[in-house]
Amino acid sequence: MRGERRSRAGRAEHWLGNFLLAIGLALGVAGAAAVISGRYQVRPVLSGSMRPGLPVGGVVVTERVPVSALQVRDVVVFHRPDEPQELVVHRIIALTPGASGPVVQTQGDANVAPDPWNVTLRGVTAYRVVFAVPLIGYAAVWAHSTAGRGILTVGGLLLVVGASAGSLLSVRRSAKGATRAPDELPPDAPVVPSRVDAPVSTCVVELDGERTSDTAIATTAP
Image (tube, rainbow, N blue to C red; front, side, top):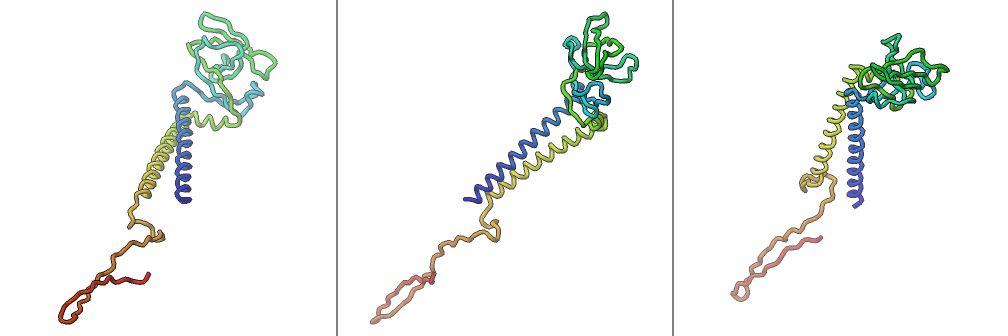
């Protein structure tokens, strides 16, 4: 009985572990898919202009939203007007409509003065900061690269396949152990004695010319 309870507990723990692993993998794959689709982006924090909320060496996760949804106090990602190849992550402190799109004035939280430019948000969408994660900025840069995304996607698929194969093998082993035939029992399994019919012997005796027979059952000592 104890062995059966331990076996059930072991199977329950195994299934729970696989379930949690599957959830983790599903979340990882969903996150990777969201980044690959372009809805979310991961950007490293390379300067201290947004301290303390966005420390150097961390990352910001940004979501693509309609430009019309932006408000004052939102933190957005944009190309610096005087150096278009450089991305800036600053907070909107003023927003006014313009002929080519909304015009925003920005400022870093750690800066004492606003940025020396106004940014026109052309297009229908912009990237707004959702949350920040400290200390993993450069790893996130690699994960966001083409090679990094490919390796993470393939690795996630391999983990899913491996977890599925492990679950199937476990189910097959459990089913085989439950239906094992007696001749397949392990050598150390207890042997239950079975009843064996005793041999029957017949004794023929002649008494006064008459033949009689006596039937006896041979017995053996236990």
